[in-house]
Length: 215
Image (cartoon, rainbow, N blue to C red; front, top):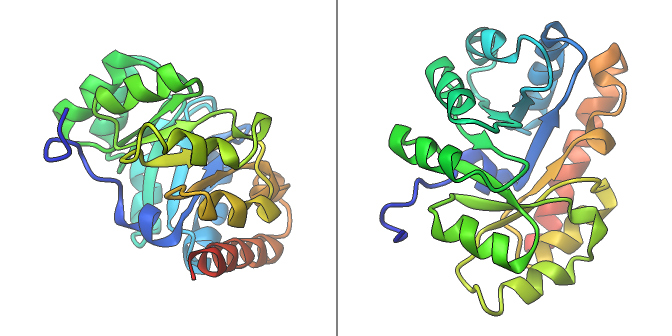
């Protein structure tokens, strides 16, 4: 796979450096959180297939927050990828190396962040044509891991994910990550009726961390 054939990452993801990962008990909880994140400037949003009704809800969410680029995560099968693309997903995310999913994303022209951890998996994910490699679970290693990976793989576009706190953002960005993926530490209780204003402040803080690290 050459870079000319690789589907580029969404603009919002590379610009903001933050991907918000929403994993809720029901898809009906998404709307106020998506709106708050998008208004605060976190416009790259991943909805997970572990939440029932995610695919069906995506078109309405995209219409309600047109400034957001909303993707679908926990994509494990070709059928999942096809359904997400049909619903208008702006990007796909896998938690593991799934060649059939990468191939489907390429066929549909949809960016994909492929989950991988070991150097062998990371290299394979990149060679298959992933738009970026999601280093997962990133909290089990330090930020130097991305620095080390970029030694043999200098063109790697890495997005660490899994257990990252807001305070970790700067270190991962300075290590060479294109963006960081944030779940619980950013969302906290917002998907269960928690304070949306506090969510917006955390989103703003996360964006500030990226900006400071990129200076």
